[in-house]
Image 1 (cartoon, rainbow, N blue to C red):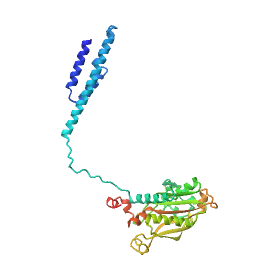
Image 2 (cartoon, one colour; image 1 turned 90 degrees about the vertical axis):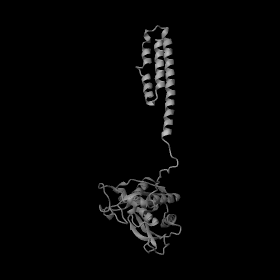
Image 3 (cartoon, rainbow, N blue to C red; image 1 turned 45 degrees about the vertical axis):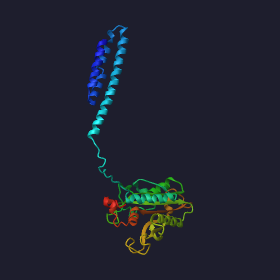
Image 4 (cartoon, rainbow, N blue to C red; image 1 turned 30 degrees about the horizontal axis):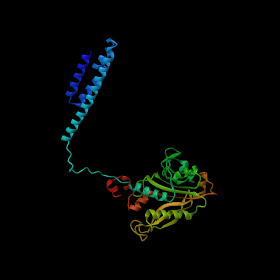
Length: 339
């Protein structure tokens, strides 16, 4: 039996030395380790040996296995080295050849404006709040003091999924949800996409983006609102920007106002951007209506607040001199790479 083991060792060694393909070497290794391998077959016949011979033959088999394992490892390294040298000889790299041009993208103008607005208000101590775009009518309208017969609730103006569920037409529902779940003081902005049943043209889109702000605390007044918006306008549109209020009506604020900013292109003298008026309409704002506070579980006798909201696309169009809103949604690289 000893002679048989040594013959198996010699034959295996010759097979390993003659092998010049790493794939064939791996097949040979697997075959050698199988349960039906020659060494394993020898071990199965050890029951016929005397008790004195068994340990001697077992030790010899283990020695042969260790030698073959080492030979396999050495041969594998040798073949891998040869394969690498062959690749280096055949796969030459011309280091003088120009590299492939890597085109880097940039943030979309709308994203740029949202990021800038968030940075401004975070610096003023605001928090960023978020909410669902598929919203319940009670948050989109009822809690915001918008009665059932209000024109905004008409199916011509709002995308309804069911009678009580819709695509939010403003980010104001986020304000209602925050007031419902958080005690004052509250100081938040709510950026996000909103949806309205508008026809697509140069200044309208069925989907656009808003940023709304809300502050609720004791002794909040209209002067706090005006000071906040002046600070925002100067940071966003330039230090020389001025702001003015015009009386307006919103169901969720009282008193309400439209806020205009002095044209940051002509400084108020009148130009193409401001259409010769010297002012650009920026946003709607006002003091939070007592009914809204009450609907959200806040005592209007103890607390007051202000709210404001503006379209991100309007800011982007004014700031970048874009005349057609559709350009912001067409994703034409020739247009977007300007920003």
